Length: 147
Image 1: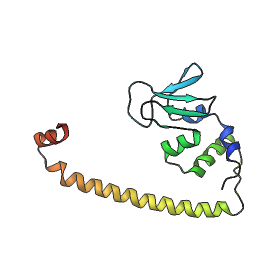
Image 2: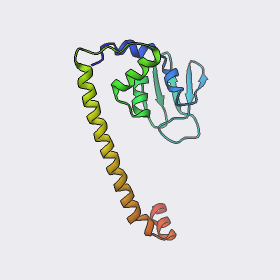
Image 3: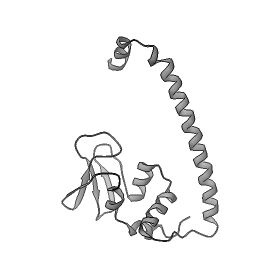
Image 4: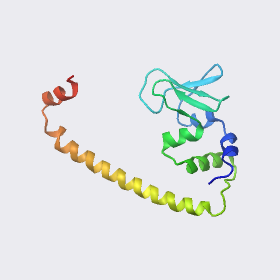
């Protein structure tokens, strides 16, 4: 468990975290941009530096800077905190013995995620090769645009 997570979260502005991944424009007291979590043409993604949160009014995604990194970059909570701490040059403080245990669990989790990703890729490829590939254009259009 990280003991100084509040200090880390407050060490960097949420705008600085998010603007690395999203083009933000200042609108009054907040910032707006295109949501990175869904396709859109009109900005519905809002970042409030005063509150330290973001909110997409299109898809409902919301949270703080740590949550953004977890959702957008696929980081775990400790990884997101370490990422922010590194940018702010703040030391991450763990409870005694926790870092080794966390690293072990993290490696196991990453291994499982890699195996699942590989499995999903194989399933997707199999389904693609055995369904859509053998359809004529007319059959494909009938199935995808029906309804």
